Amino acid sequence: MTIGDHLHALYRLPARTFPGPGARTDDLPEADSFAWRITSDVYDADEDWTQAFARFCAAVDTTRVRALIVGAWQEAYDTDPTPVIEALLAARDRFPALRALFLGDMVGEECEISWIHQTDVTPLLAGFPGLEEFGVRGGSGLRFPALRHTGLRRLTIETGGLPAEALRGVAASDLPALEHLDLWLGTPEYGGDGEAADLEPILSGARLPRLRHLALRNSEIQDAVAAAVASAPVVARLEVLDLSMGVLTDEGATALLAGQPLTHLKKLDLHHHYLSEPLRERVRRTLESAGVEVDLDRDDADEDHDDDGTVWRYVAVGE
Image (spheres, rainbow, N blue to C red):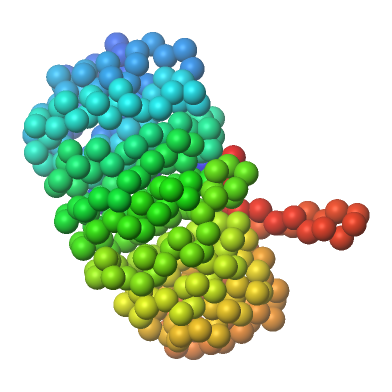
């Protein structure tokens, strides 16, 4: 599966794309009523992203902007967003109300998720200490050195393969206000070389006292992740646990059910899985009777079988 839709909203604000070059910008809506998506083109761009951003800053009251979405930049399959990050940081004093930022909102037609080149994205968090939500798409070249950010409430990293170094950086970060963490771990084929052991600082919950929604998904090692989660101290304070989009089999689900009780959860999301019907029924019987919403939609999780008996299973979003 590929990503087919741009973000529809950010920071509870509907997304709106800033008009391209040559379009009217004298009749725009109020600056604080939308999450503004600023984009260029990956191929044969008429203007680069920094030029589009300069037009945006000239046309909009940036002091009222609360959410920004960085869309495509030129040659994103071969070029990281360093100029984008530099332009944002150079303009940070013009965005005192900015509370949400998403970097890399591209669909498959623009650039497949594992082809999006990234870089060290933490300067944006350091440069905008007022951010409450931050997201990034694309794992190639992604770096996330450990940091401290006292205001961030929501962190999302969407990849077809999250590099182990970046995963460890997130896990080692001190984020005392974080309520929602969403990590797409991916596959080794696309750079996702982390292991379940790398999640231990997250699963201990020591640096995440306010975490209520934990998503560790889109993983080829989903069984190992589920087994680690089964005894994780952080689970006791969660409202939502999301282990969806990955290669979760009966082995992982059995380990999860054999661990600590999950009946306190509001929701357990396991959609896109490889569970047998008896195991699905066991999950339902254990949790739904306690009032837990359980998503067991198999989605498009189809298996391939070789003649030699080898079974191939896939994450929801890879390339």
